[in-house]
Every structure is written in C-alpha cells, then in structure tokens.
Image (tube, rainbow, N blue to C red; front, side, top):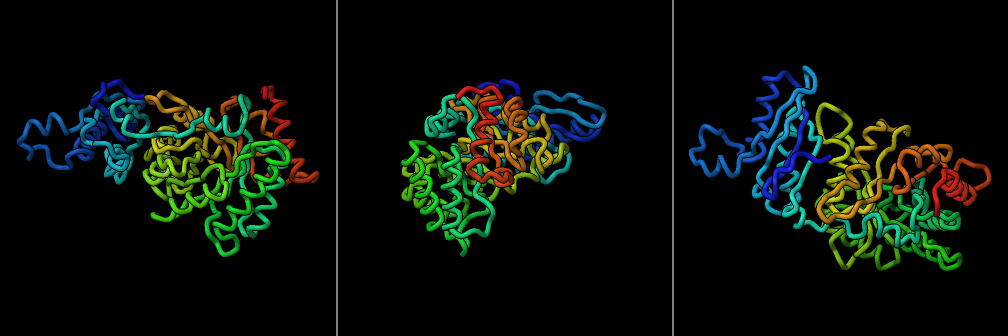
Length: 381
C-alpha cells in the first residue's frame, strides 16, 4: 500500500502504466506535468515553478514488456489542505487517459494532519457494539418496497436474533413507500426496544446518502431519532461530503461507506484506482469507520488478492488515523462464514443480507445461526 518515503513535503503516488518502455517514460512525464502545472514545460521560464511545483519521477521499472510502474513525487504544497485537490492531483486529468492506474499512495504526516479521518475507527465501533474480539455480524434491511412499518418490524426481528449492526440498504432513501424520517424513526425505535428488553447493544445505521445540502439534514434527523450510525455512498455524494459529515461533532455518529458508483474506478487492472487505495486509504481519509465492499466468491468480481488489498488499506499505517473495519458483503451466505473468518480474521464486519431469509426456521433463527457459525470458526467472544 505504501510508496517510497519522500519526506514530509512529498506525496508519493505509484502508477501502473500500459505501453512500451518509451511510451511509459512519456506517460510518466505527462503525469508530472498534467497533474500539476498543466502547461507546456518549454514555455515556463521560471525555475522556481519547475523546481517547486512540477512533480518528479522517482523511479520507473518494467513489470512485463507491456506494463511499467512509476513512482511520482508530488510537492505537498500543490495540494494545500483540501481533499478535493488531493484527489485532483492524484487522478484528475489523467483519469481521462487510458492505461494509467493509481496503485499505491503514501501521504506525509503534515498533510494527514489537516484531515480528521475516522471518528470511531475499528476500536470505537467495537466499543459501541460491546464486542471485544470476534467479528461483528451485520445485515441490511431489504428488499426495497417494504413500508416503514414493515422495515421496522424486520429490524426488530434482526435485533432479536443478536446481530451487532443492522443497516439500511443503500437504496433506501426518501421514497414514498418509506419516507426517510418516518422509516429511520421507526427502525431506530424498534432496535432500541429490543436492546432495552434483551440488554443488547445492536446498532442501527441509517442511510443518509443524499444530494448536497440534504445529507447533513438527514444525518441530524438520524441522530435525533436514535440511529446509532450512518451509511454513506461517497461515490454518489463525493468523498469530501462524507468527510465533512464525519467531522461534524453535532452528528458524531460512526459511518459505514458503501461502494455504489465507485466500481468503475477499480474493476479493470489497466486503469482507475487500486482497490486498497480507493476503498481503504481514501475512505479512511474521508472519515469512514468501516468500508463495505464485495467479497471474493460473491455475486461480484473482486478477487481474493483485491480483497486483501482493501483490508491492507483499511488497516495500514496512516499517521494517527485509526484502522477501520473491512465489511465484506455482496452475496455472502451462512455456509461461507467459516471460510470468511479464516480469510479476514477477527477484525472484520461480516455482512450477510438475503441469505439470512433463506432458512425455513425463521429470520431470528437465521441470525442466531450466523453468530453460531462465527463462534464455530474458532473465534472467541
């Protein structure tokens, strides 16, 4: 996950480039210019701009005859302290150029100090859920089309089954069949009632993904009516919008990041942004406390190696930022829990949706089987 150590004034970014050695060298230089001055170098007659602003190629090596890896050092001063400008420098204009993939990122501490990062992180979520060691177990409220009352009844059953986290599906927003405030109020109340009766600490996360100016309002409502956390899809809202929400002390709730609309950035090995950088490091930078992603073996195409990249990005050293929870999902089933625990270990949120409804003994029994499968995998509570 980490590039070269360029010091406190340098952002180190590593890219994989398609093409011959000559083409890769030209592309590497293009990145340095395009992502900083965006101006012909031969027309710049000020040496201070060339020395202090234009990025530099640190290394360029062949991975195979048609693929090369370049490490580029960007001066920290070109970013300032804005997340939007950091993204622009790392993969702005060059996102329009085929054959360039951002694969690793190393941010200096003076830049990281400008960002709040995760408010809770992995340990904070554990504390809220009252779970010291084992994987957290979670699900999503589905299917779309249920009324607020029906979703609340479903949330109550899931809480009775002993789950740690119940989240809105990312498609639940403010539809006529389940208006936002009505749905969140009823679901939060249903989970709180079960918690009070059973002495449990199930957490209900409300989806607040919404247009600019609306998301903060919905987050405030969610906090007021008793939601324990928030779901945000930063591919739809922007990473900076999620970061502002995470930093808002008046809201002060943990955030699960959902990958909707980000997939096109990662699904090809030939362009885009590597899984660990996007879903791991950049989501942490933007304040997520957990990141939902499609696990290998589900209904999407992520590989074991790509999932491992995400875990690394969610937990690698990033200044003072806390590690966050990877939350593999996307068609997971109860019969795979042992395999998932073996692959991800204890520090994971296991998210199973539809398969909990598949078992004839009922939904509450399905939740309890979920927990039993975690314990059967040899994980202590």
